[in-house]
Amino acid sequence: MRLSPVPQSPLASAAFDMRLARHGARLDRQLQALYGATPDAAELPARVRTLLRARFEERPEELLALDAAREARPDWFVDPAMLGYSTYVDRFGSTVAGVESRVDYLENLGVRYLHLLALLKAREGDSDGGFAVADYLAVEPALGSMADLERLTARLRRARISLCVDFALNHTADDHHWAKAAKAGDPHYRDFYIVLDDEAEVAAREARLGQIFPKTAPGNFTYIPELKGWAWTTFYPFQWDLNWANPELFLAMLDALLTLANRGIEAFRLDSIAFLWKEAGTDCRNLPLAHVVVRALRAALDIVAPGVLLKAEAIVPTRHVLPYFGGEEGGEPVPECHLVYNNSLMVSGWAALAEGDARLPLAIQQESAKLPPNANWLSYSRCHDDIGWGALLGDLAAIDPAPEARLKAVAAMLEGRSGGWGRGEAFQTDGDGLHGTNGTMASLAGLEAAGEDPALRERAFARIRLLNALAIASGGLATLYMGDETGVLNDRTYLADPEKAHEGRWLHRPVMDWSATTTPDAARIGGDIAALLAARIASGGAGNVRALDSRNPAVLALACGMDIVLLNFSPDTTTVDIGLTSWRDRLGKGAGTGMIDIGGLDVIWAARE
Image 1 (tube, rainbow, N blue to C red):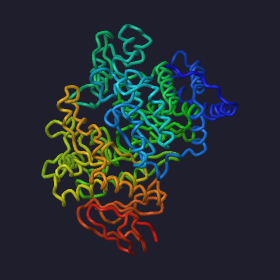
Image 2 (image 1 turned 135 degrees about the vertical axis):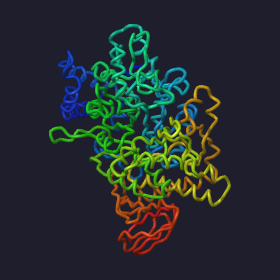
Image 3 (image 1 turned 30 degrees about the vertical axis):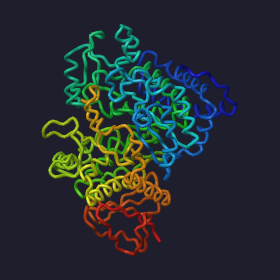
Image 4 (image 1 turned 60 degrees about the vertical axis):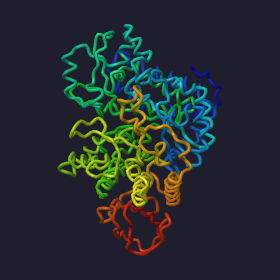
């Protein structure tokens, strides 16, 4: 349902005109790069401006005020106090209204950013966990309505929590109304998708492409009889890749994005962003025009809703991730995404735990500390996806002659093979292959394997704290995944559900056990998170955090704000000299001068005295 125009004050209208004057030329350059060779290219900028003004005129007064406040402080989300939380609506609160009833819980955790996964209406049956979207402008009916969502966003704003939802811009479900129209023979909507008519061309393209789900959905094309052609299906056969080379598709997606922003959504996770642009003869990942698409969307948001964030989900090596923050044109910066997942740092943290060696996260943090202004990493220890090893292979290639063998050994440790303490499970991996590892944070860190053994449990809690410390001290918008704050273990009940049994990632997507929030495990883990966050707030550290040379391969040293944080990934006590003459530990382990002794799997947050 379309929002009605809202009478805008002269001040708000003037602000829109000023933003259009400031960002309009940048938007036009992106449109020219994308669509300059299309038949109606000359008319496109005017059509886009008409759309922008129409959506601005629908923007509620409360959101206009939020825009103004955030324009005045564009780095508002690069803040030491920013803590994120990610969850599925149905697993956390059953419905959108149920989530609203749990906002107090999030406030008590210190959450300022809530990512609700797979909120929009998905296809019936298998929907890739809700990421096969059937309608961008509707909430999944089982979860609630748009009215419920607007009530939730209002409640979250009162709690100073920004809502993020997924915007699946690489593909739609095969039962989206665009796809249905394409199957019915409508050429307008057929051109919203990438459809190949020639089997030889399909084979030629396939030869250059990787596979996302080699076991459950091999290949990248699916023959659709109604189309008399092969739809490009990078992920699952029921997810048709969108044709971003079509300006009509761009207009439709921009309209959906701005409409959702006017419902009170304050951040969008741009799903599978690396795959947006397709070119023959390439692997169709991280292509230059994929960045131009996102820069065009960013410019449009900067004009209509500058208080809204874009977050890139690009699970690729660090050198390919950094450009999603933006680039340059003629020596001038061109912003792209405000936030980008620091996937490689997350994966390297697990590798460091398995190896007892901090040099890999050191290398990643050194490469990551190149942020532009008003941007930040999204840092995390676990999420709804597997721990994918492929992106880290690219990071390792320059520093390790046998990266695959190394990561196979790490995966074996986390999956409980070769005497490992983890209880993860291999994902999309056959035999001796390497793809990903599933599991909750606690099970991967050894809490499941520890049983009731006090010493083993203590080690598991230490690993959990160490990884949370990495996410928080590295300066990013540290984001918890639902249940990790309580020590939730792997959930194998999904195997009894025919619609989920083939998808191993449901292992770490359990229903929230609210009784677990009051257990000693939750108190221990939650207390550690609160102490780490309080230390970061006191340090003033966020955004660019430098990695220092600890001169100890087991210890990662980070300069977070005014402090130095030491993370010992070895199970053994060790000594570090980082040149501090006098210090005290913000986490309560005392104070000292000179050399610092740090216990196995321990964290010291050293404030200068």
